[in-house]
Image (cartoon, rainbow, N blue to C red):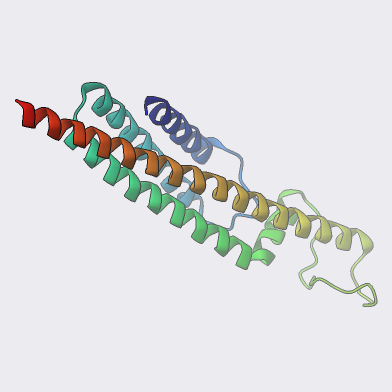
Length: 181
């Protein structure tokens, strides 16, 4: 159980650091304050895991139950918020393409839409190439964010199940110990 708590503490601190200091993800269409909100939530989860470590080391079963419940709610909020912003980013694809064009100083064509090869476009081939690169780059980032979300959500579900089993076993031991005294 301790390895899970230590790993989750490290994971929460790592995610908090990347939220505060990580590079901007161009495909992620959100205000900068949202990154800081995620960072604060990750720091809360890290603090909760330190509390969980103390509960396990000192064998505080009732406090571990509080840790388990609050951690599930906080982690659930992070997972749901992350999913909302990934879906929002995928829906605002044209905004992320425009951000990519601006960041990499590509020539911008405001009238760009994915054109078939038969269309005669007034845009230069350089603008079309830049738009295509940013279009693909933005979709790749959305896919990567989705895959990372899936891995982290699955991991947290597994760890949540392990916390529940640990709590039930400890609670049963605690009840047996109090019955014998």
